[in-house]
Each structure stands twice: as C-alpha cells, then as structure tokens.
Amino acid sequence: MAKYRKLGKTSSQRKALLRNQVTMLVANGKITTTEARAKEIQKIVEGLVALAVKEKDNFETVTVTAKVPQKDKDGRRVKQIVDKDTGKVLSETHRDKDGKILRIENGVTVTVYDEVEKEIKKDLPSRLHARRQMLKVFYDVTEKPEGKKSAQKVDLIDKMFDEIAPKYTGRNGGYTRIIKIGPRKGDAAMMTVIEFV
Image (cartoon, rainbow, N blue to C red; front, side):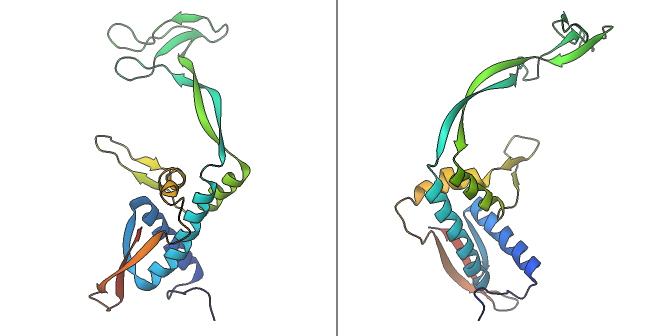
C-alpha cells in the first residue's frame, strides 16, 4: 500500500504540483484545491512549519561593514570621474551643468560608496540545514508592490522563520486546517480550502 496519493500524475508532475501548491499556501496563507491534493499538501506544510518552529531562534547576530552607494536628492547614485591610472578624483560629478555626460581624457566614471555598519542574522548549522530543506520545496515568488514598476522577489524562508513560526511556538502540530466547500461543477470532485490555523 502506498504512503502517498499518486493524484493521477507521473512522479515529476506530482512533485511540481505539490511544490507549487505548498509555495502558494505559504505565500498567500490559504488556497482552494481538491481534497486529495489538500491532504498531500498538508503533510508537506506541517513538516516545514515544524522545522521552522524548531529552528526559528537558532542564529547569532553579527555586525558587518557593507559598502552602500551614495544617493543624491533625486535618489540616483552619486558618480565621479577618477583617473584610471592613479585613482585621483578629476571631477566630483560625471555630468556638466546642462546634464550632459562629461568626457575627460584618461578618466573613468565610478560610483561613490559609503561604508555602513549592519547587523545581520548568521544561521547556525542546524538552521542552515533547515533553510536548505525549505529551498528544496519552495519555488521563487515575485510580488509587485503598489507604486513600483518592477516586481520584487519574496523570501518565503524568512517569512517561515519570522512570521509563521512564532505563531505556533507552543503548538505541537496541527498548523493547517482543511475546510470542505462542496463539489466542483465539472467533475464533482470535493473542493476544499486549506489554510493556516
């Protein structure tokens, strides 16, 4: 007897389907799917949330020095022209008064950087392993914030550690629930909503 449902698909299709639905569940909080799929998704998600709860505090905070580009009042990077042989600054700006790009012989345009102290979370080995286990399951998700032109990548693993895991610290399992919403119109398959508790 099999320990999982085949869902009428080949193994590669089934794994891709389950990975996609698990990713969407974590990204959105709930999804609508068939009952058989929901039960398979629930097994995977419960294991990932348990892993996140176990490893959520397993990191150390480290202070690092990072280079950050300087920005002008319009939010653009500050650039200057330097001599490519000596590194001496030839011009504090790479544009003239009319906004045209300056051309100086033997000069190279470079971005001006500031050094900033940042505190970052450094994963300990067991949390790093948990992070890599989650990376095997989640697909990349992009989200387009309001008012922005380009889409940004959503870090689902940080969402698992920072948002989802703290909710379930005192709970031993049962992180998701399946609610039946009735048969599907086409083939009468039982449709369900699977969501975090």
